[in-house]
Image 1: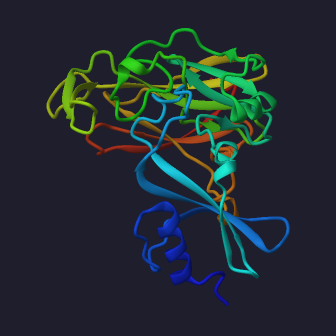
Image 2 (image 1 turned 90 degrees about the vertical axis):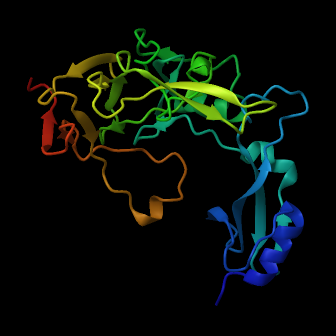
Length: 296
């Protein structure tokens, strides 16, 4: 038996969101069943730009974001409820990399790496500017074109040091003691430009680092291992090829974990060993490597 009538739900969503939805293409995400066994919640992203709060405090954070609508659906009565009053409470933050034991959260801010407790992370979900949040800085050497939390697009780099927390890509050891990640040194890479035609009120010229074919100035990738017991960092020597790239291997996620919040990215291996790939720039050589902590 179908969970809901697709045609009916498409009509209801169209009326509320003001976007035309088709029954066969319902953009439902983050579907979750409630404990009562009869209702579930989900999200729908609209085509409208997100609106800042009335106080205007998050106006910059909403740039280029789309409005998200939150709903509750009662299965027996087929009643759809727009959770408009609860939208602020339901909105998520995506900058935290949560440890497997759920006790530690790692993130970047102003090009450096930080950590906080899960308790403080929950406070940040309600108010990111909560003055009682305790942050522990793990690095101090982050800089422009060689720092933590730099987006892959490399655009808008002038806003990377604005105090905003950002997500970092990395993997945890299963016991939550270690965190491994790569950082790219792009200082020698030449600049490239693109026009952001979506900027308002006028298009802007965006600058970023990009290696063109044939250029010698290439990004240099570094592999770091953080010990969260003493908050120390160690660089792992992985050099083999000129202008090589490094990839960390993740433990596959189970199907039931896909829609769960705050899922940890766990490295492939055990508590003291993880796997990575090392590729030459021309991709003629791709090595599968393992690193054992304490054996170098």
